[in-house]
Amino acid sequence: MNKPYHVYVVDAEAGSRDTLRSYFEAHGLTVTAMDSAGELLRRMHRLRPDLVVLAMELPGTSGLQACQRLRAEGDRVPLIFISDRADEVDRVLGLEMGADDLVTRPYSARELLARVHAVLRRAIVPPGLPILAMPPVAIGRLQFDIASRCLHDAGRLHVLSTVEYAVLAELVANPGVAISRERLLAASHSRAEGLLLRAVDVAVMRLRKRIEPDAAQPRFIQTIRGHGYMFVPTSAEAPAAPALPGEPPADAARGQRSRRSTPVGAEVSPSMNTV
Image (cartoon, rainbow, N blue to C red; front, side):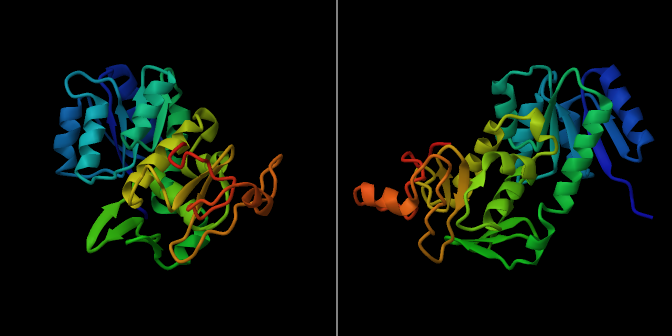
């Protein structure tokens, strides 16, 4: 029999914390509940869970600070934020800190459980099962090991968050193909309709900081204006991006512009770091 997943629930609101613990346990999860980020950080060094559900607003050390500390230490444990506020700034900030998903109060325990299971599935089985058979992919000086979900850099290992991994895997599995932000959102988040497309942009910005020699002038993950992003392999000039609805073919666009050093077609955003 498989061992049940172990989830940490961290929330200062006792009623919410106890409700989640009871509901999750009734659906086969092992739950450790706590009321502070300090206790979470102490427990993480003793027993690492499969996933953390973490309130952003906590007394003392906030959930955001705890997440930032975990990510700074290289811990990529799957993490879902609970926020008291539904504004875009809080959503983007939580994702920038490295969260895999975010819900806002009020929420249903049933919905949160569905998100927990979806994040756990992505943490173990990446999107598009066939890509597991792909060999490591060179991205400049780095090697992206899809099976182990890591970036290798001259002997150093960088573990990607679940969202970073899902976005990069989707792009790398389709080199030279313009992938829409909607598709990347669906590949990287459990309930895409509850999130803004900005979540994809945040993940891309984090990835660029990891893999690009100059994140302000990206070479490998390029912006396709009005559509999404495209992975440009290390080995060759990128193929021209496909013309999007309402835009001229890439060859025609190239004939209309002056010489440029960028290896992609006219659909690439002039501001290469614009997301």
